[in-house]
Length: 329
Image (cartoon, rainbow, N blue to C red):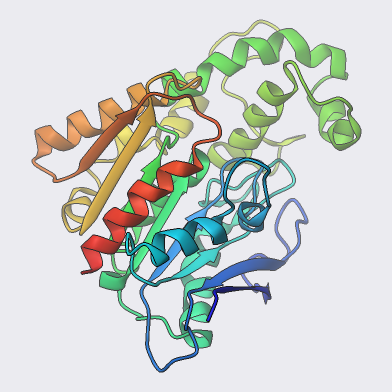
């Protein structure tokens, strides 16, 4: 019997009425392993998409690579991983992503996942509904989300895999700010950009520096009483730094949160981090900083680096899913 993927429509009470008026009914992909219909229960893994992505995009077919169903089929067929249920959530927002956290400027996506989606999946499918048999993984902003959800909800997830996850914000985010300052005027300013960016073609050059900065600001420094719904950590005219706003961003930086979540990190069955040696967003240094602080705290972890960049690294799930499967025994 072959595997199958179900696309379910999951209606969220938590996301209803969110600030950006994004849909509260979400399309969630659910991978069911071969022979799922037999009377057996399975561990589950939640795979989180990166910024500007949603879970079902992992199912897209490619000329030269596997989609997630093909990858899982191969890993199970070759006994690299055990059969598992894999969930592909949709936490996409108007600006491209939620970082999988609660924010007045985007919506309560952390609560949506923890309080609504996980219980719904456990009720609908034959999962093993225990943190010791449930993991979360992701790449880029998805890796960030996996790490944050694991740290903040160790009662839900016992295994975490963070591929090139956002961390060390001074190195990974601040380089985008100068290009935004240089280019935002050609789009008519922030307010005009927000009104028209979906119709902008082609979307290249500094467009993504602007969109990502706006998207992250909506997550880390929301201000729903302001003209845009968020505060930027710099003055748009002069570039002068706003330390109070930047402090709000850094409060969400994983490298700053180890002490607060030390007991949760220490309780992880698997804490896996990796990054490419040539990552364009300097995330290899964020991972190195994070694990250096883990080491000083005596917290177990697994850290790898590989000879590649930031994009097109879905093959790294071969490594993390194997590690997760071995953790489950």
